[in-house]
Length: 74
Image (tube, rainbow, N blue to C red; front, top):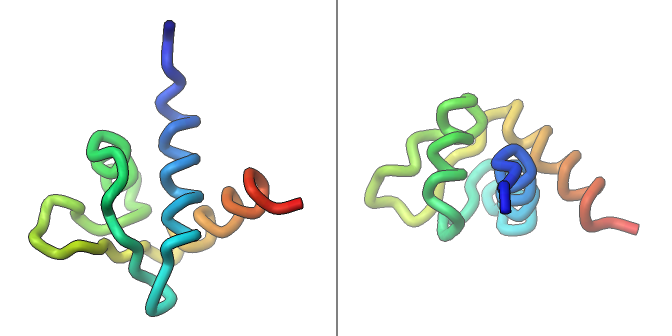
């Protein structure tokens, strides 16, 4: 079975919107490889830190919200 990593990344980013707090932070207890790819795209700060959450960039917050609404809202 071939996995579409972009779909995984989109789902992870959408779920980060569900966990968003302080308007720009999200818990980082999701797939580490996807988190690294989101960091490489500039959507989140470096997930390889001792903090339990990551900052979402402005673009990351906007994309996260859009993906959440597209995937999970009626």
